[in-house]
Amino acid sequence: MFRARLLNLACALAVWASCSLATRSHAQRLRPLDGGVVSLTDLNFDEQLANGKPWMVTVNAHYCQLTRELENAFDKIAEQLHPEVSVGKIDGAVERGLLSRFQLRNLHAVYHINGTETRQYCEGHACEGSRLQTSQLLKFAQEGWRTQPPRTGCTSPVSRCGKAVGSITRLPAKFKSTYLHLHNDLNYSDLTLFAGLLAVPVVVGLSFICMLDAYYSRRPLTPPPTRPHFE
Image (cartoon, rainbow, N blue to C red; front, side, top):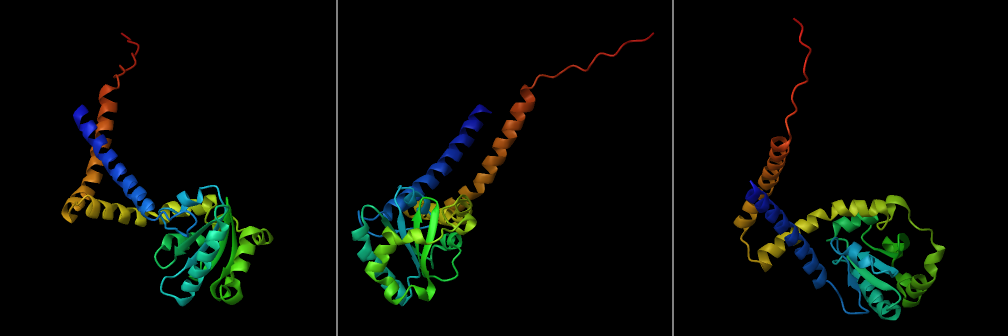
């Protein structure tokens, strides 16, 4: 029984280590050079924003012309704001979990995030023309954000509610990242991964049975209470 428990524990640790390694390697591949625009994803969003700096973040779609204008504008301000302010971009067409956290109706928006406060600079067609001038973006990133009311509650992606939503919406991205890591980096076949996926509930069930068996088999039996004997 003791060996079975060790085997179950080893399987659980192996699954946890694979998920952690896949997430970490994915985040390292997306880490930019100092002063560049950070590609924010469902997996690395909370980790990147925990660097203690304010952020200017753009949400866009890779297939749209306005996206190129936003990216060009953010490339210009990234060097000028570094190192006081970090600059990031989100591909809303791919990172659907982050799109839900921002509660966006349009795939184009610019935000200033400072700690747990999120303030919107523009959204949709308002992110065009003079709004994308370098001077306007720099002004908002440095001081102009103070004039905008912050988002509160679940409307802010960095609030407690927003992070709770993110822990759920990032699950598909975690599963996908883990699969790609096991399949491409560690060269596991699809059949092996499928068998491992089926083994997880079996291991969990066996562990639960072992715990119940250990609990009930080692608990001392209490004798029944003595009853008075009447003749």
